Amino acid sequence: MKPMRPTLLFLAAATLSACAVGPNYHRPSAPTPTHFKEAEGWKPAEPREAASGTNWWEVYDDATLNGLEKQIDISNQTLKASEAAWRQAVALAQAAGAQLYPTTDLTASALRSRGAVNSFVTGNAGATQGTRAPPVNQFSLTGNASWDLDIWGKIRRTIESDVASAKASEADLAAARLSAQATLAIDYVELRVADEQIQLLADTIKGYERALEITQNQYKVGVVAKADVITAETQLEGAQSQQIGLGVTRATLEHAIAVLIGKPPADFSIAPATLAATIPVVPAGMPSALLERRPDIAEAERKMAAANAQIGVAISAYFPDLTLSGTYGFASNVSAGLLHTPNNVWSVGATASDALLDFGARRYQVAGARAAYDGTVANYRQTVLTAFQQVEDELASLRILEQQFRVADQTVKDANLAVTLALNQYRAGTVAYTAVVTAQAIALNDAQTLLNIRQSRLVASLTLIQALGGGWSTSDLSAVHVALPTPL
Image (cartoon, rainbow, N blue to C red):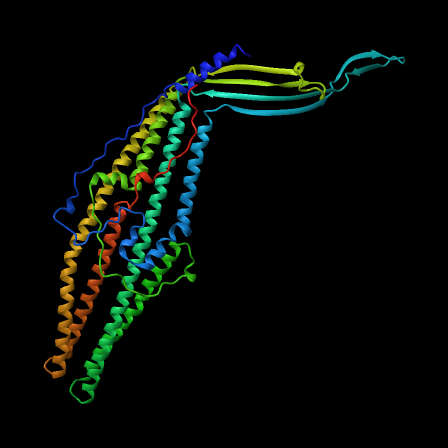
């Protein structure tokens, strides 16, 4: 076998140093503005950097929210499924790397056999009889090896594609995690706003009860008509009905949060409370940084790389597939001394195969791979455009809602003053009770509007953090370790 060694070394060196066919990957350009339009001329009073760390929700200074968010990774079943898909993608990439190496196997066999009748003789009685050969034993122990020489880079392009797919899967996991975190935070904010709505109605009900008491007292002394009492009672009952109805909203949000952290709704509850008064606003930064901070963009970009490598896999079909194979072992009719040199058997050879006529199948496969790549490029660019749109939307929402909140806050103060004046005038008998009812209804509606605006501002703040990547970065993508042989 010594004469074969230089040939094997030459082929191995040629395989490992050969250039893989197909285009090398370069990230295509994407439409990227130089600045965010909606951030111009708007300077948040106290901007907070939530894109510099992973626990982005901590900028809201809510201990309950912090505790809930930390349970997402531990118990959320959707994330567990995404994490399992990522591990599967990594395993596939590592399995593809194993194809660069020779495969070997060992076979041991023991066989005892006897052939059929092979001759005939005539006995004393003149009958014809056959004779059978004696049983034969056959023992063997052989090792087989084969090596697919990746001269054209088919295996290496497959590994490249699988590694890119694994990283795309990891980015998908990060996107799913960020989505779950943002969904939980939004549900929590809406639950707390529901708590504030319930408390607002509780305070309103107390005010309506006092107004009803005043009306009843005046009715008893004959100052007002029975209609005023009925009106006050109707107004009070309407507020009580609204308060009860908010229980449905709160319960639904509490159940949604329970599922997000992987708990049965029956085993989970959140005590009523209020949120912090401040609305943290995150600086948007440079638009170009968004390409590195959003996991969905990273996923789309890695899918492009995977599709690009598949073009090389398709092109490699134009070239012959070369495989080295060899067998070495022992065979004997007796088990004793099986491994002695006289029983040695071996073979070595090479196989080359290539399609001579395929009626354009390979050409169509290459065209299909290129089309698939073009599709991933379009998806990547659309993902980038959507990301910029989301950031611009939330920046505009925060800017406009802040202005609206200031006006609504003053409106609530004026409405509350109007209620006080109307009640005083009603006690003095200078206005009808309808003036009080009208003022109270306006005050309640304005207060509810203010809470709705507050909720919208909080949700816009949360959504902006999500649109900016929530502190994630492409540097968070882990390396997929695929052992590659070095050239000889």
